[in-house]
Length: 100
Image (cartoon, rainbow, N blue to C red):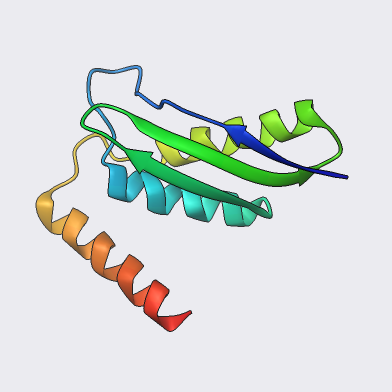
């Protein structure tokens, strides 16, 4: 097993709509957890940059896990989130963080 960090960014949707960075980060964190990996995301006005760290048998397996994590996170993004939904997700993320 090799621990590998994979640069998995920048992220942009195929459609013209950019994913919400906060909900993307939460979805990516959940997807990484499901695959026993970790992810760090940063964003600018038009780009989300992600670094995935994972134990994998080799570099190709690590890249596959990183791509799957980003893909899952993008798939969980709703086409248009209301501000109320975004606020609810931020509160839920803050509650999870404070509970840990």
